[in-house]
Length: 172
Image 1 (cartoon, rainbow, N blue to C red):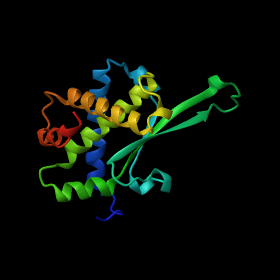
Image 2 (image 1 turned 180 degrees about the vertical axis):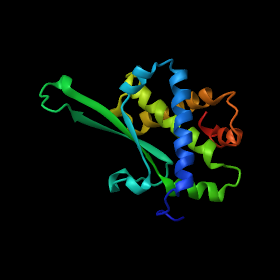
Image 3 (image 1 turned 30 degrees about the vertical axis):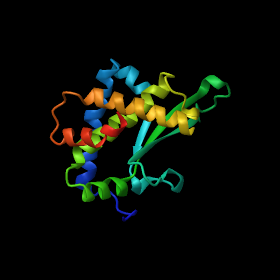
Image 4 (image 1 turned 120 degrees about the horizontal axis):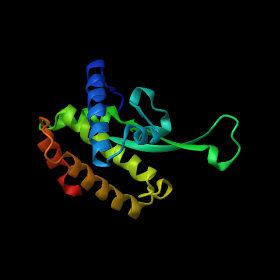
């Protein structure tokens, strides 16, 4: 398994399209207006732009939480939470290469929705970010988020999505 392969320009465009669809589907699911959606500050990074601590072995992506303080702000109210979705290009591309039933576009849509659901849950305090790495809590949260992701994608006509949902069936 090559851990250094990164998305090529065509695959980055596929990711960009997957993110646009995922944002719309998650926004619709949670009935969030565009202004509410913008409050959930996040960024998306691919392997080429990840720091050593953002690269993980195993998952296709992870959400990392960060805090920033408004310039000149000294009070706790000036602290902003934001998240980074860290795509693990190599893991995704190696999985697609080894499993010919999986297509990149529907897989990226699924992964993005999954990670955005985590961010929405953190933002709405349905899950506490600092507790999300505790083993038992993490497994339960993953099951919930996979179920929500499957629910969002139920009935959405994307070629290859049935195979992706089947792939993730063990989490439901």
